[in-house]
Image (tube, rainbow, N blue to C red; front, side):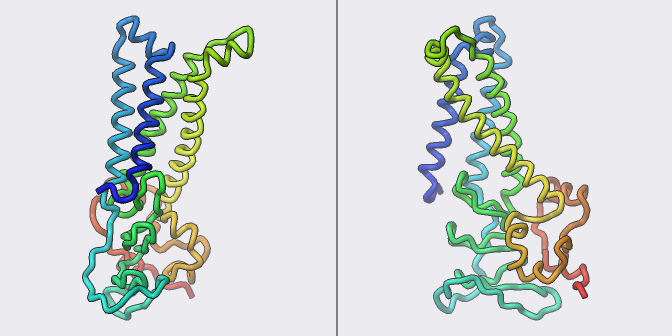
Length: 262
């Protein structure tokens, strides 16, 4: 179940709870609330941290949409991903993976780290040690949102515990642990904010990270205009389909409805 990601997941969990413990034990707003008997803010923060960790493991251990084997394997992979087009009216853009020799649906890609083909492949996340694809992409975005809220609250809590001092050495000695925690939380906040913004933009145009970065190499996109996306149905419909529609989409049919560029 944990595959090769045990070390990454353990490090993330330990770092999360160590920083949380520092925020609770230092002279921050959380501790002052506890001393005054106001337990609601500390309880809410603890629950938010717990929720972010649970979402992390949910996305990390979830099947991202691996393509199941339904073809006969006749030999070993050829070392690179091939795109063999099958001329059938119902499936105009079927491909066969050159690594695992599976017939790929449109928008699927082989991940060499996971050694599997993933439906609506977005990217392989080293933070999760798992692919982000059709089945777990929306949960990945929800996790980023919860994680960002947790980190921003943690930044506020850490800042509330840092007090000025007359001498640099004494000030750093008094606030050193909180400053380290604030450094980690601040860096992660910026990274998560950038990731969340990028993913919301790509979701709004119904494009994946792989398609955005490798458009010139993807057979069903490279012959279209730079701004033309055959899967884009408008911002509202794209967001609705992504967050509210839980079903497997036959992207070959969606692509077929859009006339080829002249």
